[in-house]
Length: 336
Ligand SMILES: Cc1cc2nc3c(=O)[nH]c(=O)nc-3n(C[C@H](O)[C@H](O)[C@H](O)COP(=O)(O)O)c2cc1C
Image (cartoon, rainbow, N blue to C red; front, side):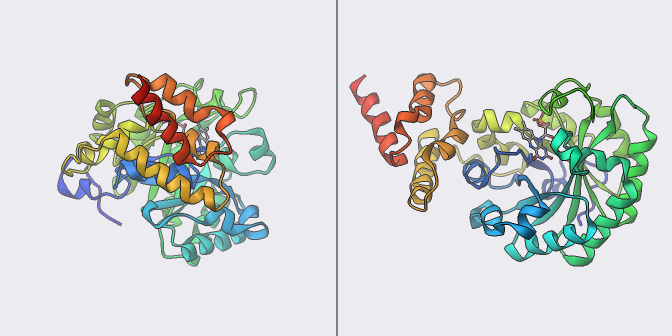
């Protein structure tokens, strides 16, 4: 594990594997979305959607675990609470070649609460510590946690400090902290990403209290200036919705945050590369619209973006090969 204290723009910080991450997002960051993101940034760390251990241990594991080699570095996020099952699922993650296994302790949905995992695990730090230990005993890849800063209206610092402290003792060295409480009653998951106030100072305090841990901040981060500011305080930044809705932002990340030369990507080239990939997946049976939706924000702010989005989201085109839709777009351009 790299030493990341103090966080800064120095050479070791540039090589911190968690410096900039795209968040796990259910139904959004599937393998196709991650492929697109990888066309845009070589160095950001990508996360799968949360996959429940049951789906891996008793379902079609390959369906959830398959990914393209170009996606590295890529982390598998698990949902679950049973240490034995989590250890078995972590073993699968390692066997399939994932670079990290992350435990979800932040999802507030009612379905997840009924299953006693996600955010409500913050009430059971010892169980989570046992799970971390079991997973660490099972694999050599990093075992990390993504969590909230508290539950319901309790804004005390002590519970989250003790949660992190106990998991650190169990061997977890990387914490991705969504800087909001999870309100377990009365809010939808969407509201739980908007209504509980962002309190970045809690994440900074965790970094100050646990300087040897890698602390990654998440929640409400929408532009490069904010990323730079957070990187002065903590080790890494995880971006969710803004990365999904405005993927073109990712094309600047390698130069802006990883000290790489600017590759001056062109949106047409990224689109062409993603269409080639979609064609390949289409031949394997993947649905055009399900893949194309991930790139609908690619041309945001450019002339013709609306028409381009309409073309790629028009369900009358759903039986077409992606390259046929691209050809329609090019024909449309030449007729104008
Ligand atoms: C559609 C959607 C699905 C999400 N699914 C997950 C998930 O599977 N696991 C998880 O830890 N967080 C999930 N989240 C939360 C994000 O990872 C992230 O913590 C949250 O959106 C705050 O970051 P942001 O403000 O940068 O979007 C999801 C968010 C969205 C918008």
